[in-house]
Image 1 (cartoon, rainbow, N blue to C red):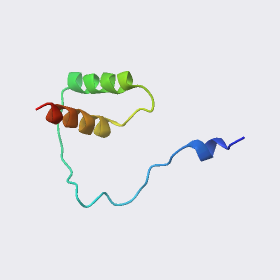
Image 2: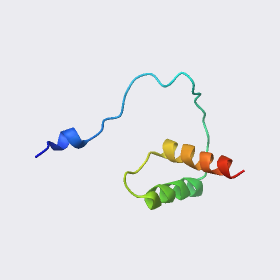
Image 3: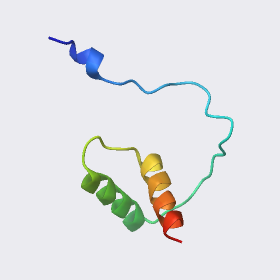
Image 4: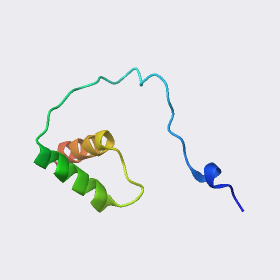
Length: 64
């Protein structure tokens, strides 16, 4: 039987990757709710809002 704490993948802490840049985006509450609904529709394992935004932007750019 495995220990429950062994099954949980811990996120790595530390400095962000050097090939990235932070951005600040303001969004309406309705847009944030839409993102949260998209996260919920994808099912477990759930992603963070920043990761969801990255995935949605990638999807939109790939369609062009």
